[in-house]
Image 1 (cartoon, helix red, strand yellow):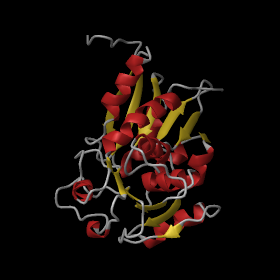
Image 2 (cartoon, rainbow, N blue to C red):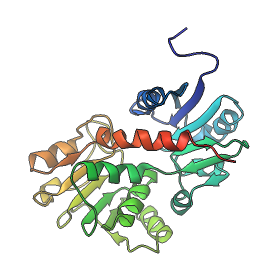
Image 3 (cartoon, rainbow, N blue to C red):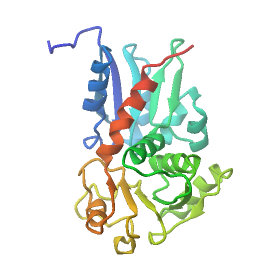
Image 4 (cartoon, one colour):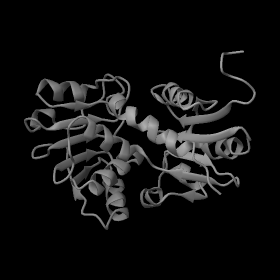
Amino acid sequence: MLPGLSGETRIHLIVGDPVAQTKSPAGLTRVFAARGVDAVCVPMQVSAADLDPFMAAAKRVRNIDGIVVTVPHKFAALAHCERPSERARALAAVNAMRRERDGAWAGDMTDGVALVAALQAAGFAPQGRRALVVGAGGAGSAVVLALADAGARVAVHDTDAARREELRARLSARDIAIGSADPAGFDLVVNATPLGMAANDALPVATDRLEAGAYAADLVTRPVVTPFLDRARRRGSPIVTGEDIFAPQAGILADFLLFASG
């Protein structure tokens, strides 16, 4: 038997496809241990076609207390939450689910607030600054919302114009502009797409158009320094990596996963 692991250990899953890149299994398990909680986080690679039956089965396993959701399942996972948070409803997506004491499942979307926390730790205050977010998927949507709520003037770019417009419509109470792959004029550029996970991926923006001193952030966690961040750093930009973002994210996720009501 592994030290600290027993039949009483509570299980949290992270579900994605792919899932090898995620930092959550080790990171969350360390946070659980530091808080004196007998729990582990285990990765599960689940295809989009298999997500619904997998979720139905996982929710019936009585020692599974939480599910972290990564690409490409953040929108689809919302349907499996009986109690989504206000921001999860606004974004129509979740990245974390927990079993409440009455058996219902709550959901939240924490990617955006984790990015804002990482930016603030790196010395970037969003209030009044111009931010370009590339990617209107689950994580990108959360980043747009969190930056707007932190006072930034946000533009969003996505090669799928329909998805971009769906996000702007969901967040119509906020003034979200249409962006492009040209980062000129922005104080912050965030890559919230999977671009950079593969060596031959295109760059999310034209890095030669980055403003001097503009911050660059990337939600990709492997490689730690993506080609986008490498180009930005060489141009003198302060960078915020996926690992930098996961540092506050782990605590934020644990706060959510370990709090059950009802």
